[in-house]
Structure formats: structure tokens, C-alpha cells
Amino acid sequence: MGSLSWKHHTLIQALISRGPLKEKEFHSIFTGVTGRNPGAAKKIFDKYLLEINKELSYVHFELRACRDQYDGQVCFGVVNNVSDDQSKLGTKYSVPQIAFFKGIIEAIAQDEAAQGCISSFDALNIRLENQLPSEASSSQQQVPPAFKNFSMSQKEKTLDELVRDKWLCRTREGNIGLGIRSLLDLRSWFRNNDVPSCEVCNEAGVKADLCPNKGCMVRIHKYCLKNLLSQRDDKVCSGCGKPWPLGRITKEEAVEAAVNDEEEENETQATAPRSKRRKLRSHRDSAENRSSQASLASSSGTTGRRVTRSVAHLS
Image 1 (cartoon, helix red, strand yellow):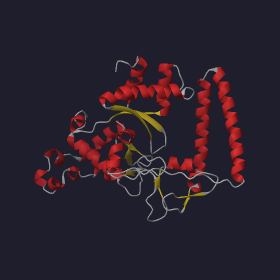
Image 2 (image 1 turned 90 degrees about the vertical axis):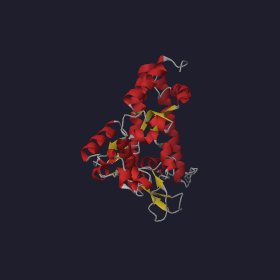
Image 3 (image 1 turned 135 degrees about the horizontal axis):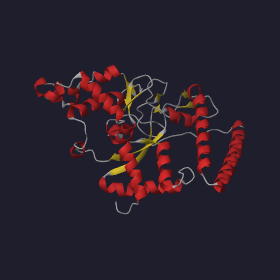
Image 4 (image 1 turned 120 degrees about the vertical axis):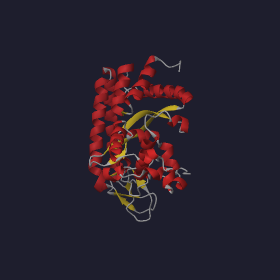
């Protein structure tokens, strides 16, 4: 990676050493290293990421971004694109620990209710022998001793380590969910295991809202629902064509999202040069005027554009 500067290497090292970072943290590091604010210099920020990924591709790594499905925040991380046995040997986890983790992510990802979590009790009672080939798991003699001797205390310790390393997370209710590292790293695993994807963003819908109509398999992330919110109190499901009531669960969150966007914009203005601040204020005023005009137009009977997606092929 000789063509990358020390600034590129610093960004890569920050993600590798600290693990996946929230967008705000990564932007802060980018500003400290380059002296540029990503909000005011998006083209420069995107160029850095493109240059980094071009070099990382030679060693089968990728700097990737995704949303945390539990809070909707964008995160950045460096992931390994190789999933063969040789790459797995580089992990610090033992074979029984990996089997324990695999059992947990399967239980979470394959939940038809898309709750995105399981209870700590269910996690600790995952059976490791279920991760063996069917012919081996049917015979107790072929179950490795390491699996049989994997105690409850070892499971508790492993659970803590997986949460600390961001492979898993603990929800506000105390349940076990997928950590941001899993959401970044297991994209192909979700596809290969037929985990239904979000109707809007096409990412795996591990934690999502389901269409309220029985028989419809459409699911949408809660933060994607915010983007679908319009002035109407309901919206038609693109899967079954029946109304999907969005207003009851998203209007307050949409207001909160608008407040967060305002705070981010103010933060961007605070760190931008004075001349750029004037441009940003001018741009914001112009956007507000366009928004007001759009609101007047919609009240006169303009219909919203339907959001669709291209269905991914799941093998």
C-alpha cells in the first residue's frame, strides 16, 4: 500500500485498533488527521475512502459503512472479505467459542418476528453440537470433548468478550443482539442464509418492522420507515398493496431525526471556514424555501413517489 499517505494509514489503523466506529467518531478522526470536515468536504472524504479501498482490495479487506440496526446510526469498519478456513484461524476465539457465537447469530437472524435479539437465558442455553454436521451431531461419540466440556461459566465469559469486541451487543432491555461488527462483516452470510432483506435499503432485516398483513413477508428497518414518512398517516406496502400504518410509530421519531440533522448541520457550520458558513446558511435558507413550496404543492393534491427495491438473489 505504498501509494497511500500517512493520513490514509492513520485512518485505517484507527478502525483496526479501535474496531468499528460511529460516524461521528470517525468523522472526528478524519478532521483531526486531514484538517477537513467531512460534512463540508464530502468529495474529499469520499475520495479518501475510495483510495483506501482500492489498496485494501489487494489484501482482501474493505473499509465498509453500514447502519446499526438498533439505533440507526451509521458506522464505519474494516472487514475481511475472505471467509475460508485459513482466514478463520486468525481469530482469537477457540472452536467451541466460534460454534457458540454461530448458534447465537443463527437464532437472532432467523427469527421470523425480526426482533433482532434473544434473551440472555436463551443465548447461554445454545447447544454447541447443533453446529456440527448432522451426521456428527446425531452421535454423541462424535461430538468433540471441547464442545461437551464447554461450561456455563465459559459461555458467560465468551458472551462478555463477544459484546466487548462488538460482535454482539446488549439491548436496553438486557437482551443479546448483533453487534455492529457482525452487521458489517456478515453481509454475505445473511444473503447465503436467506435472511429477508429490508424492502427499502435491501440490507438484511435482522431487526425490522414487519408488514401487519398476514402472509406478507415485507420487513422494513425502523430508520427506513422514517424516510418513508410523508404527510399521510399511512402508506401502501409495496409487497401486498395494503395500507401500512406508519404515522403512529414514526412521526415523533421523524421530528427527533430532524432535530438531530439540525444539530449535525450546526456542528458542520461551526467547524467550517467563515466564508463556507455563509454559503451553508444560504443553502439552508434556499432548502427551507424549496421545502415550503413543496409542502404547498403537496397540500394541493400531489401524490408521493412510491419507494421500491430490486430484490436480491438469495442462494
